[in-house]
Length: 98
Figure 1: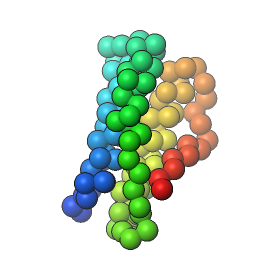
Figure 2: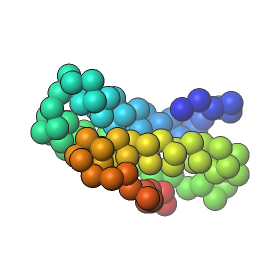
Figure 3: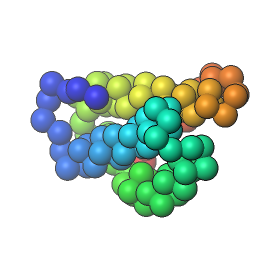
């Protein structure tokens, strides 16, 4: 994800989490790892992937741009995972940010 503003530490952590998840899915898509290995890597990295929550209420710039990009990326990853499992793409992916 590209951004035109300076990210806070929390925003950078969130982007790092997304990048980690994306790299695991890409490894599976590129044949470097199988589905079971991908699941294992996600479980091993679950703490890193889900570790932080952020408060969006005070940063309208973040809310308007970064969150929109983040949600689109999460939907993209979820769709790729669904396709890898032979399921149709999800209509909606819910991401909770507190």
